[in-house]
Length: 411
Image (cartoon, rainbow, N blue to C red):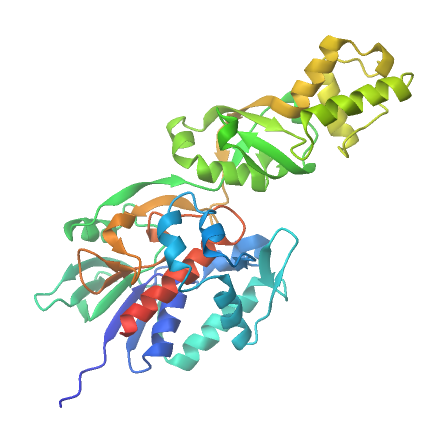
C-alpha cells in the first residue's frame, strides 16, 4: 500500500487553546507537520497576565455537570465535552510535565510557583520537543477552500500556503480577514460583548473606601432571581471582585443593551438572613442601649463601610441603640441588604478581558470541535460563542476544546 503524506495542519492563535490543540495533535500524531501562528510577537499573552501574573489554570471542580453550570454560554455543549477532558485531566497533564498545581480556598488553581511563566515555559519546552513550528509575528490574511478540500491560507499578505486541516484558536474574530473568510464558507458569527468587567460607580457611599472588600455579597440587576454571590471589592473606579465579575458574565448581553448605564442592587451580608439581622439589632437595643451605633460595628464589616451605611441611612453617628427609630432601623436594613447603586460604564483589563460571541455553537460538532459545514476546519477556545465566569473556567474551556480538536485532527 502506498504511504500517505503526513498531514500538514495550521493552528491559528498562539494562546492557551492554540498551544493545547497543537501539543495534543503532536503527541497523538508525531508525523504531523504542525504550524502554530500568532500575530503578536509574544506567545500566550493572556496566560502571562492571568490571575495577576500567577495564571489561574483551572478550577477545583471535577463533576462535568457542576462544572458546566459555570458557563453563561456553552454550558450544554461543554457538559458533554468535560467527559472527555476536565480539570483533573488538566492537573494530571501538567503533573506529568513536572508542573504542580494547587487549589486555593475558593477553588481556583494556580501553579505552586505562583508564576504564570511556569506554564508558558512548560508549553514552549513541550513545543520544542515536539518539533511544532512556532510562527509568531505572522498575520493570517485569508482562508479559502481548495477544490480538493484542503485549505489555502494567506500569510503576512504574501503567497497562499496549502494545509490539510486548520484549527482556529484565536481570541476574537471581529473585523478580521478570518471573520470574512468564515462567513464566505457559510459560518455565522454571534456579535461580541464584553463578558468579565468591573462596574464604574460614582457614589458618595464608597468615597475613600477603595481597597475595602466584603467576603460574600449578593448582587443583581432587575431581579434577585438572577443574583450572583461572592467577594465584592470597592475600587477607585467603582466595584469589582468575583460577585461583580460573575454578574457581568451572566448579564453580558443585557448590560451591553443598556450601554453599561444601569441600576444594580447589593446585599452586603449575603451569609446572614434578614431575620438574623433584625434579631442582632434587637439584642443591641436590649443589651447595649447606651452604646452609639458608630461605635458598634457589626457583622465583621469594616468601620469605614459601617459608618458610610449609617450616614446614607441618615442616622447621626452619636445615635444610641435605644434611640434608634423604627424608620431609621428600616433604612439601615435596606441599605445593608438591598442598597441600590448606579453603574456608569465598565472597566476591563484589556489584555485579560473575556468576550461572549464568536462562531455559533450550533455550527460546531463538539465531539470533535469540527465545523459542521466545512470538513477539517476546527475551532478551539474563545473564537467560539462560549465563555465562563471568573475562576479558571475560561482556561479550562480552552484546554478542553483544544484537547478535543487536537484529538480529532490526529485521527
